Image 1: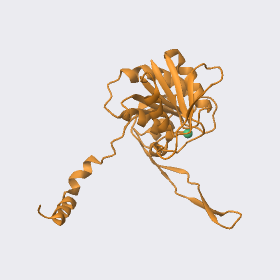
Image 2: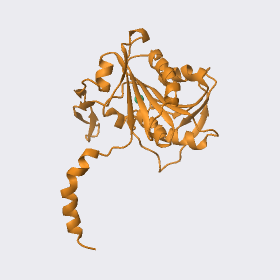
Image 3: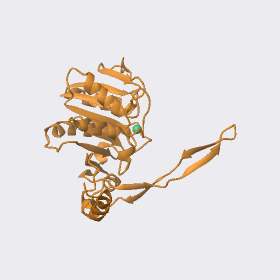
Image 4: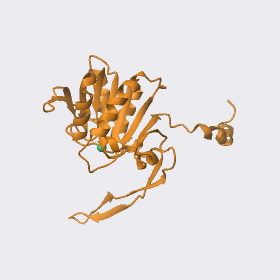
Length: 259
Ligand code: MN
């Protein structure tokens, strides 16, 4: 198995190292990751400056690894376009901090997996639900166990797995749940401060408020100590809304007039 690993916490983040170490027995593991943290970079790609992909050593791991000045999505594209062999699987993580509900839209970790799916590759994003842990053993083990089945599974096009693992030891996990995305409405608070020259600057400070965290959601699963696996695809179309827009389309069409 040829596995490309990336993340958004940066190439030297301990979560990436733990993931690479764990995946090594499965085959060839190589890394293209951002040179510095890019959490909340979303799915941005770089079009207006040169991209670098410099070979680096990950101490003691002996894997091919590249440091990039690009975003997580850039890293996946660069990896896929420059590699001699297309990866069988792309794993993004292990992210420090959960990626639940609408966080998938902001997350560089999740966007890297999304980019891989768009490139026609099997992919998963793996996150641990804590910012305060150095123990990545449970999510690393989950990634290893999932790698084979994810490769074998019949998945629709443009689909990948978003995996969130509670920050507890492996033997304290209470199970696994296939989930859908919940909703964590952030209280959109902003601190307004002044710089030394008297000009205002702003700092987001919102705390998540779990407004949709019930049965079947990713948030509910991890709150109950279960590993959450959410199949995610890129199609943001609101399919059920289409029929409700017929009147709007009719008005617009009338405005366009006969041709
Ligand atoms: Mn991150």
